[in-house]
Image (cartoon, rainbow, N blue to C red; front, side, top):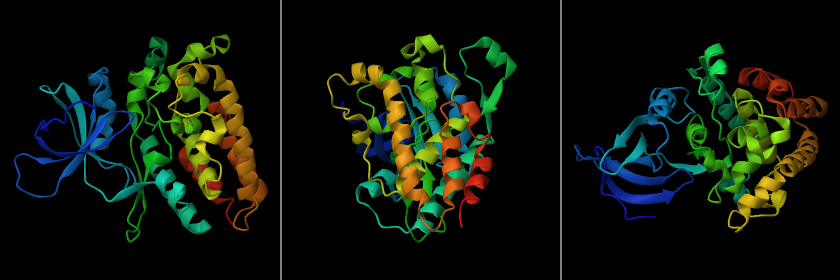
Length: 324
């Protein structure tokens, strides 16, 4: 990482927090205030078509759902030549960290958390955004499409303090993947992203990987339903199968890109196999009606998004029908 900047726009940098796939995270405060409370914000160091990207990100500058991250500002610092988003300082922990620690939650607690995530996604999907399809006919036919997350994985689901009336917060949207497709083929991306993304999300960014099948369906709300279901089943089963077991590789592998290109189809089949095993284990719990739950999971995980649930609220209703 280059030298830590001193400010971005009207925000003074207090310290560097972390480095994510999409950019740097800093703890900051407004330069015009003396308040000690600092506002962390994410700095994204690449330069996509900001005008179009801004249209989509702006939907998160207003409240969408209590379990959805809200940006206080989206801006550009000309001096640093970086775009940035601003969000409140929160006491949170990634869901992936709790899985690593095998946090002990009972079944009902886990279900409550994922219902919160599902409700937040449902609220997001009801918002319309400009269609960014590369196909001009598709843009003309559907100038507005439902918003969707596009990068749902355990590290993008934040867990808040337990004394609140809600626990989960959905963060780190995949808007930028639409404008910088190379991120999907970067060795710096967490392998976790590949495991929890449906095939159309990955292949939409790199359709030449499967040229014989043509371009895959575009990412859509059904893509989020796929990711949400896979993460939920994985979490209900205690996260006993790790991300790296699925692939046998790590992000530090020198030939990561080359091997992923070779293994996309195999990877998807492995995900289905593991989802099958997870579903059988979870479906055997007394709190679930097993056959209904298995039917729910494999509809949500259909390889073709057009065969999945039409929207998140429908998926939530069907899932609730599986609970005893």
